[in-house]
Length: 282
Image 1 (spheres, helix red, strand yellow):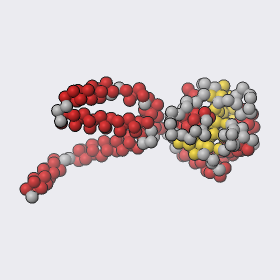
Image 2 (cartoon, helix red, strand yellow):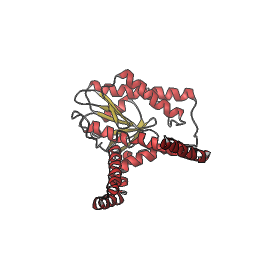
Image 3 (cartoon, helix red, strand yellow):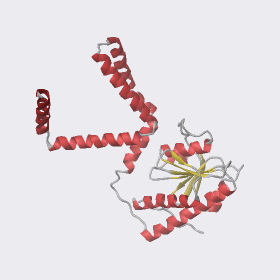
Image 4 (tube, one colour):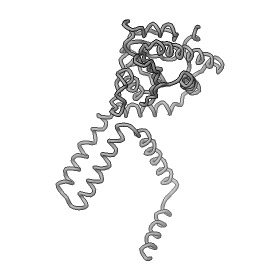
């Protein structure tokens, strides 16, 4: 009973010394750690975090039980290994910083009117939708990357510059088999096809189905390092898949893709993203 009273008294003394600044400080740190854990969930960095926690626990236990040699080895591993995560997980760190940049924007840019934006979005979505399922019906493989807020200039520059309006006819011609531009990805920025035959980074995930080929893995790979939306048409099955934030969703129906595209572009428009260029011409 005396021990319980002592513990309660100690806790009471600690609480009385906590100021409002301490509470704010704790809440900020808690939020940062929560966002970090949320961001690395289901990524390679999650496994790294588990490994680091294991090493920290093992180091403390070895010191507690006076296992001096093991303690020395573990301390050296932690010291040398501090810089390794920044090298190994450079893509994840880059994606994280870009995510922060996308969500801390203060400057608002001008917009078209809501009615004008809605019309542009509707026309753009229809063209992408028509071309995607037209290619799917013919079992013509295709890979379309719809650029988000994160600009992927380095990817755009790996292909052939097009800078043409998004139309069903142009996209259909690009992906015709055995033509110079069909092998690779098309990058769509705003209402323009910026370039074709672009090279995309392949995902390094090991848990993907063996049915997914290079085209699907490239679609997932680019979605891991940017906020783009990737559309993939399988030349084997004619199925349509989408990749977003490192995840892939297969056999997407026309109605579902329509809603996804509308939400994708509507969100950008509501976030003060300005469509550039003329309206889509039918």
